[in-house]
Image (tube, rainbow, N blue to C red; front, side):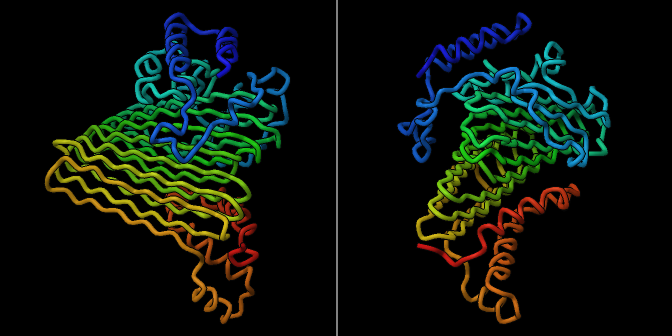
Length: 421
């Protein structure tokens, strides 16, 4: 591992005193641990060796001025970061609700929560050491934001090393919608290593969508860490569309009684893409509920992985936890690994999981073609129906029209032929 790459990067990041100490301690932990590798159980299906061989560097100043995405395409308040720097700030909401970590870094909300939810994993430590900016969302008690907040993280620099960070704190009884969009604007290799920390107080609700649309040679690693208070609700949707290698870890901890989460995911992998979604749900209080729905599609020589680990800890009685995992193979060379797991230490619980992987239903395709659809249209309808089983949140937050055209276009590229050798 090229330790000087990371130590030199930290030297060029200004920070207040308390945060400078946090950054140096985090970098020391990362350098001691190194990048995750396949010797670790959680990483045995995913290798980051390409990062050891890449010539990475912090983004250059001029690449931060690259052409930005059209912010009018986002139906809400936009915080757009280009190569780690704020490029566009929406005006619909006050900075009190949706600002940047650089602007609000020396405030009590950031002091109390930054780094407290994500823990001390190697990649989380690296992000904590080297993040330059990111979205800071704060919703005061009882406030219900009337529009979604979009945190857009664009990457345009070849071989850039990017560490976007998002912090969202939703106070008691408050509600918000947050969308993270990771957007590749170059065909060259780069690495986005993102961390999102989310804290929900008693009775709070957050709907959270994460779209990974990185460039075709990009490496994307991300951690979403969520802590739920009593009677709070968290509904997340992960959509994986891009990146040569994409690994997303979700860690949700239900600390309060009667808390509930729903995590839905759709991963579309083709070419030589590697898409890995790891989920851990920790039930720590009575009467908590979790629902997980995963739909993976793999074409060509791609590989999709789902590892869902639900833990019901001592005292989390009357927990209700379910996982539904399905994969669709569109090529004989594609691979999907589905591994839902349960670990139960409490009594009187309702827990279950199911997993299946197969090819498109030929009887269903025959039926659709018998109704006048050509083969491509029939397969497109079948693939959309499969993915739609995990896309209910789009309708709930009125973002179906924003996201579905891109998702349908991605599916249409996979609907032209039967499973291929």
